[in-house]
Length: 427
Image 1 (cartoon, rainbow, N blue to C red):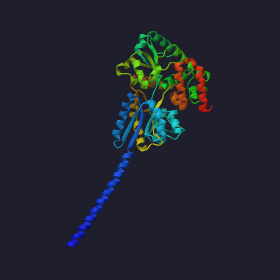
Image 2: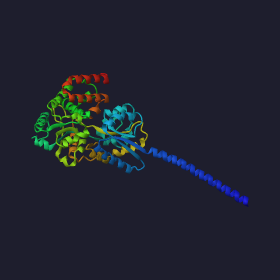
Image 3: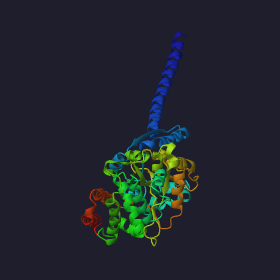
Image 4: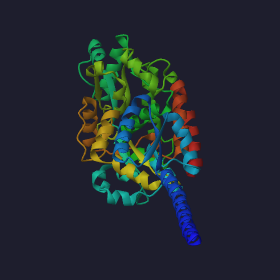
């Protein structure tokens, strides 16, 4: 009897041991699986953002996390100039899962090198072909879409209405002669007519873009951006000559090369300058108390025979080809591209929604920008450093800073740029 009870107890203990071992094994496997899921569900995102843009980004990311609690979202905010320097290194080595960037040539540069995920299926699946039809072309490289568009900017002149009134300027300038007259009156009233954050060279590129678009038109401008026209062409010199007139007349602010976009706003807020050529996003830099005193007008006509074209650069999100969590990256992009989120981002940044189902902007300046781009017949350019190869753009903007410092050297500067163009484009 004792022996039988012993054998029964032994079998029970053995069964318990085997069960315990099995449970432990399952726990180990489950733990390993859970760890793998946690790793897979981590979604890393890098975005370029100025200080006043972060809260808008973060609000959208918080909404995504609330709708997708299983995703561990990790966002890194990086200043724009540092971001531009680091972007190539990220994409080529160990990139985050999603990055913010620019459309046009800047996007195509990386798509051409196989560093971006093809999003064509996402465009079809999510209805982006219809909702983002107006910005599909700059999001495309060789027939495939690699970018998810966010907002885009209209460019024009922010101006202080009170300073215009004080100087006796009765209306927004619509022609170049009216613009020059306004500059003359502002200077006579003791106000610097034009602020420019020349330390950020792309702000000077906006001036080149618009003078070229107004003098030579968008078709010529795009040929120049593509490296098909020599910089020594008389039409390019005409652009710099018109620009030189403004510099020689001291219509630009003093020490402009000391200011970047983040430090320029107080110059206008404090009334030290009256105007600034900039994208609609800059409206977020003005305190709410003075927005009623700030207006926005289109870059004036220089040659009435040239169709009016505009800069309308598109900001985008990309998935790097080497991203580790592409599934959740696609979930984030699909969320950010919905009409309401697209509109929320645009409103927070002072830009324009690129989703055609998003509500029109309510902000007065954004409305002007929206109407400007909606009624443009001469074409929409992406912006100087987004419409051409990066190396050529960098050399061109460096030359613009040199020109701003010494506008007497136009011929030598254009000769150097032409040598650079021939080297880069082999033409």
